[in-house]
Amino acid sequence: MIASSQERRERILTQMLKQRHVTAKDLAAQMEVSEATVRRDLRAMADQGEIELVYGGATLLRASDFSFHSKGQRNVEAKQMIGRLAAELVADNDQIFVDSGTTSFELALQLNRKRGLCVIVNSARVALELSGSGLSVIILGGQYRPDRMDTGGPLAISTLDQLRGYQCFIGADGLNMDFGPSASDIDSAHLYRRAVLNARETILLVDHSKFDAPSLFKIVDWNSISRVVTDRMPSRQWNEFFAGLGISVICPQEQLSEPVGK
Image (tube, rainbow, N blue to C red; front, side, top):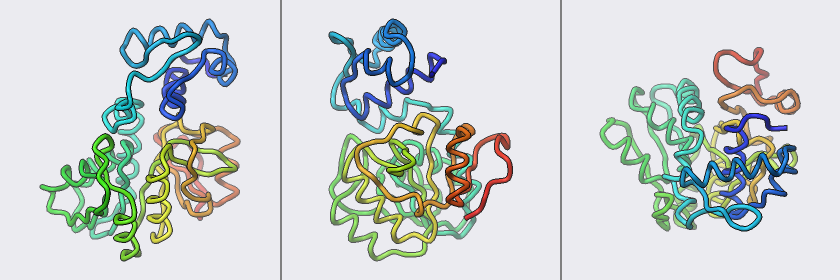
């Protein structure tokens, strides 16, 4: 059961980003709460202008709700914490790939303190953020997506195929033990799969709302991930799952015992 109203509303938004429309009945079953509780959450979210109520449930207001800006308003403090923790894994003079997600953007905000980095990005927003830092920035060409402020498609993948040996930081829209990290759109999943394939190491940046909430398009298998950076200690089941795969878990305030290295 998801008891906290904030956690329930974050879960609702995650589901709506994937499905666009949700019903109170389905949400109540997923979160093991009453339909009356879900309807109160939906009403509060509608009052804040986040969603639109419809018969039996709710829907996103418009297509732009999938935008970088809209996603960036969710779990802000969690993403900032993840960004700071991830930045500690980056060494001066390193080569890294940073994806175009809002969690990875919080990592990018921390990179201005580093020296001699080469940063590979497919995000115009990240490239602009780093433009005055003195760091070397490689931006992947390709089809520009204005709502996400990033590039993708065959041209971006072609550029990635010429690069090797970098440390890869990617996010995900959902996680599942059987399915792996996943994305809500096929272009992002395809690009990040190639970024992982060519990397020397891949570090997954995900907040607590992504666990046990798979999206449609698989990115990679779990054996491609070496570390997971998150804002809260995962459940016992997830900790055991990661330990069994040799995946280290990094979260704030030493909430975990010594992680198992890969």
